Length: 217
Image (cartoon, rainbow, N blue to C red; front, side, top):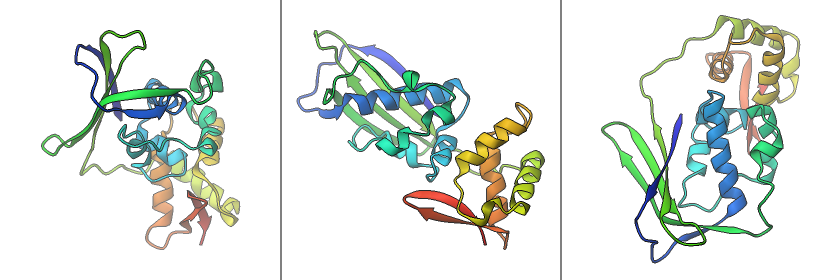
């Protein structure tokens, strides 16, 4: 999970800065907060977007201008369980930009963390706000398959649901509808699909239009 923290700083603005779409920036900030609120981590979020695990964390690197594309905003209410009004700012003008100062990326191999940081200054001047996004990478952790999820997936496979390519998100939403609250996590679904893919399993993973889909072999 990405830890999102902010703190005031008296550090002066940098001589050069990154000029970024305010809409792109605010959407990323809101997603990070909402992901924390619902107890989902960034890798689970990437998975439900149909992307590789590191996708969202790499995307939020403040040194890069590329952010979420418009077509990736469509599934956000379903993933986050929030209306668009809580995800997409409504008070930002078209073309409005934000300046990110003192943008850095730090890698600490001893504690296996990557930290992105930057500072935003108010238009009227004064102290800035330092924003820190930090991720700790877990290694050597093997997740066990959730039997409830495996039973659901095996039934779904038998029903010919995977006769055509399927994204993970519709499966996740159906599981939320039919399975007991708290009986599974997004990571359980990812693990369950991985079990059905490896060692000659009935499914395979394919990329279609930049998104990962699952289909019967």
